[in-house]
Length: 65
Image (cartoon, rainbow, N blue to C red):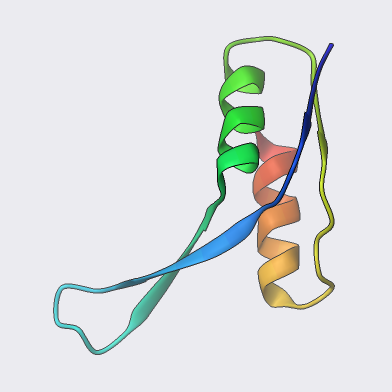
């Protein structure tokens, strides 16, 4: 089991026309945990997620991966 401790965050990336920001999940620890899980390793992420829409997005992304 790989356990990753650290943060998860939301990157706000401008769209090509610079009028809208796109929210993408990220953060170093978050990305390491996702990468390990995608490689087939049993993986746990120890991080806190907020209860707002961004936190729900991060949780959903982590659970899918």
